[in-house]
Image (cartoon, rainbow, N blue to C red; front, side, top):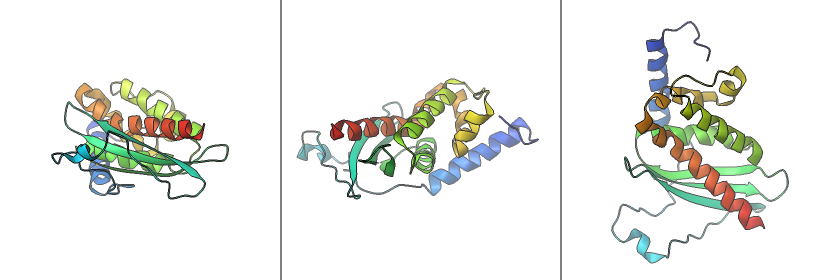
Length: 185
């Protein structure tokens, strides 16, 4: 990764600031999911949710993700175009958790909204590889640049207990896209 002439401490500080800013002002966050922290919130249904697309020529998919280690949770809602190549026409989320999970959700929205499903899944794969790097990065400038602000999570990958926080968004994206595509069949 290009260090822009900065020391490791300066880069780490910059990354922390980007993560905190994305968590404070999250992109794509809407309030649409049931509040599962309230007693009996899930009792009204058998676990099935009715998801509607706001775009006429899209198929929706939704996935609820929960990290039992720290309590982070998010519901990711995508709308995938019916025409090929399938495009993510809308991606929003609802949830709560630490600044890392919230920032990852925000950055993920910015990265995949409007992309084809194949492009979004390539980004998901690249982000997973970054999390597996244990702070070393990807060693490929083009891949690192493809992650945009997502590269700031390289520092998070040094801490195994925090990796799940950063991956929560991407697991939700992958599952909700799979559900939208399955519904098209």
